[in-house]
Length: 233
Image (cartoon, rainbow, N blue to C red; front, side, top):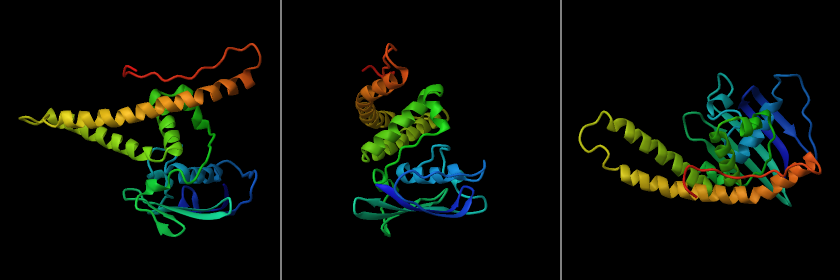
């Protein structure tokens, strides 16, 4: 698969950008602050429906605009795909593939494949565990798109459970009557995510070790990759 054409409208600093691309390396050259990284971010958004720089969609929309659009034509084997994402902060985003709307935006996940290297990747080793979990979960969804639903449901249940605990402090009566139900949902969904993370780490471990050995050279310690959890494994 390769990206044949990219168009963005009202995305970050770009009012409109239209790029025709060819197979092979493409180098974007320009002064600082001209929007080169914004174009890379737009391509990454098609693959993950998220940004590697911010956690919300609002900063992706150009100042003064109400929505942003990222449109890309991709060639996979002999098949042509047109992917369009309409980013609407505060409202539901819209996604179309070959002009046909998708029922849910996350149905796009797994269709566009990208690998991104950015300065923000240092957070994987310097940041807190939440950054590493986010990286693993993004990779999980890219590899197994159905896990996007599990991840979304887990986040939703966690927020509702936490909201229940907060309101229970002020409420009277049996405000925590449904806590066991939320705990059950959280345990089930969290277990699915944990199992998938463990499998992913096991699959990645030999590649990490080999890649490190190729850089460190003979005689260096062998790199290891593991997953530590507060839940007994």
